Length: 281
Image (cartoon, rainbow, N blue to C red; front, side, top):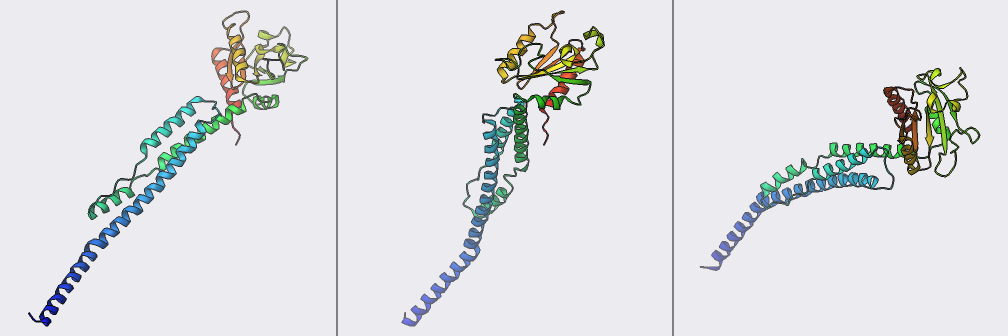
């Protein structure tokens, strides 16, 4: 074979190789590269959504593990459950397949993964509820006398209020070790005057004691409030020394008259409690 023929053959083979290479590149390599790019873009999107979810989880976890405790412990339980559900909902990025068609299919699947809007909304709600409950407990932890007077004003069936002073404190506990830091008595129109007073004199309110309506005793800490509540419990059912109803609200003891019916005591206690823990935002 002469040189010209060999050159022609080599050129033809080279051209064929180039053509085959170009065909392969255009029809296989480019689509594969595009599929890989689509996969990586989808994976980056899911990674970002996972980061947002992780951040929301972390915020709620940090609040729930903080030293600040909630008024309602169920808000902490709800936060724990919300975190667990969010962690279970998190979707990891799958491994990239080798086949181009499979890569494209997986990229489309990843695009639909990690739709956490409702999950993050639940985390946000749990966080808000927990923070509110924390703020409520702070609000009823050794609140001021003025705060109690303000919150009791306007409650249904409470007709008069008076804070005790060292001069008229019937229990002689104001400001003493383990005693209350403030005590506000209130009259209620649900209690008949004949049940409390020997005459028609309704003032001062403190003279009527809890029998005339009730009281809110404020303590420096929860331990003292619980101790007082336990002391009052020792007289429950005593026909002569019946202390009426009593409930610890933060570091306060909310009391209502023994002359009220059980349903009236429950309603009054609930109304006072809700007034004390109400957050004015």
